[in-house]
Length: 154
Image (cartoon, rainbow, N blue to C red; front, side):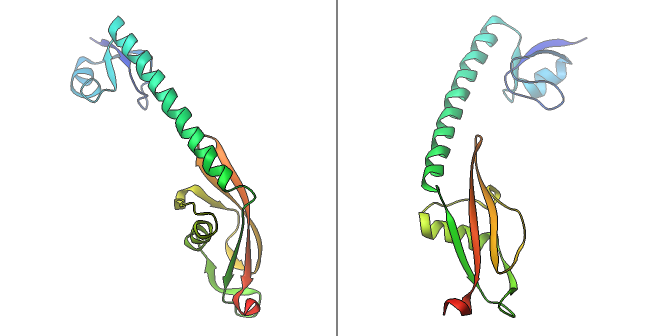
């Protein structure tokens, strides 16, 4: 015996939002419906789903616009980080994400999360490196990091 429900949100290994699926009555009654993941497959549920989808689309558009505004602030970003070196080339340690994020915040006034930063190589030598900031909703900013010897700058 199974019950037909309409998924209001995507459920892993079950389906996407808007699909009508057959599940056991207990699973629907005890898990899906109380958590708001599904509703009985009725016309009212279909109307409710359309309203939820419209709200999600509006929220996604707002998030995309906010990400583009941050990307505008980060246009043509070039970060220079000074670090102590062993021989003028190799660093004592490495330049970490925290150092890069602090430099971005200091130069552009934008606070970012570690998870948004993607660096191609480990920064253990003096030189130039490429990196990407993923602001979400398909908005990415590519920038250059220059690692210099702090003794050379002094």
